[in-house]
Image (cartoon, one colour):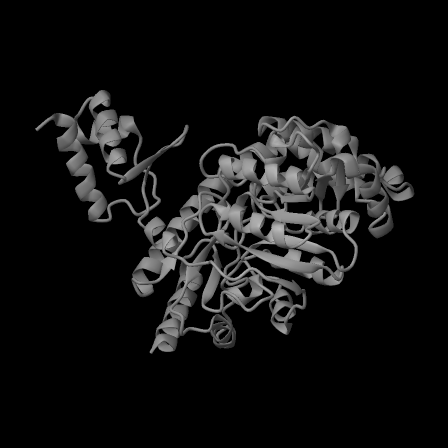
Length: 468
């Protein structure tokens, strides 16, 4: 037997023995060479052999990872449903869950985390700005577009991601939700039809309801996002003013829309003359290198880009942005009417934090932590939930999507878990048409250890009881 095959078999055996878990990073090539006593070339050949067998997968500039078997389960998820035009009316469930303010934590405030160095640096930068400009900050409103130093940093960040956007194209908003609301307010009127990927982000559903808009829920693939063929069929049936998508790690599935589907979506926008509203809130949270936004492909001005750092940096930092293209002047007027101005101290402090490399370093640490947290969650799912339960394995973002047996009502599960102090996000929250009654979104924003792991075990008992 060739040496590389001997090593490949040894690595495969250790993976089967759970020496390394699904999604976990293998030691470096040099470390494997030292451990097993083979040359670096032999190690590389062995890893490529395992990659060909779909046992491991390579990540650019990050190394090799154990390939998760959950993709097979994700492929079996049936998210297809009949496409219909309906008026948005959110259930009480929505407001009940949002009242907790902790939809991304299974056990809110259960364990006090150590202060994050990035957040400490950001707060120091904001305080420096406040001390040096106390009078100006107190006496004058911010410019309509927002602070120029922050817009320059955002321009640089998007250029690094392959989108050639200059600072004049950005308008600062009060978070991504505000940006999405402005985009809808700009291009629609009450009674218009809006297509959304389904399952849909509940914040979008809330905006649609407030603006008296109709919704067309377009079914999505749990791995690759919106079904473009289903969207085209809907376009042939109804007039659609806007389509809201999250190409990079859509919540709740974590789906990432591949390049060919993005191009198909842009072609449909040109053919049927509708506007694409891109929610790019998870765009910086890729586990496998930098991703370009859909806006980078936009040559016709049909894409409005919305984003913020609430998921990647701080939920308390209410700073977002919108790149409106041909709609920019109207968006600025709507911003003035809805929020007037944004905090100059927070904007300039964030710009300083980014210029000093704080955000870039933070993202590196955040991605490593999220990968680790996702591994913990997947390990808990495989250890404590029935093996027939399917779930997604996203390569970015902070959440995955779980398909429970059809007899399990995830809203009732939410109510039962709430009695135990456990917070869940049931699938019904992501549809206005009664879809996804046996699905859950689970976040890996926090480590699943200690009390949170005990809460998950309690949840597994509730699920098992519901199945019986």
